[in-house]
Image (cartoon, rainbow, N blue to C red):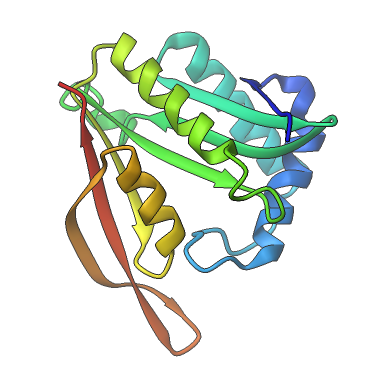
Length: 172
């Protein structure tokens, strides 16, 4: 499968909204999204993301094939108020749409996130993944991420509790 990895633009708004709401509809175990986003919510998020990329406080990429967004990945500081204390690390988030998983898209997004983080001379990348999302955990482990903590009962879906697994990749 041929796909392009590129940065997001404000002109991507409608397609990003379609993509994220499609991922939400999938109800994939392990994804934290619950409710569909509105155009106004997505516009606000995308503007913050594009501004953050411009300022260097975020890095965000899209995977596209045939004019459709099929994956995304981002790096951001854990929180803006603590950014001064955590400039050595960023938090990674990755999603790939159903039907496009297992085709190398997630791997390429992660590869480019790690390369960018190394250029920024970061010490550490961190992510949270649901313990039920075993495919994602295996993918992250292939890139060297290691489990450093598990937070039990973090999420509740219906009557079922889901633990969050915290994984880190040391870059230096």
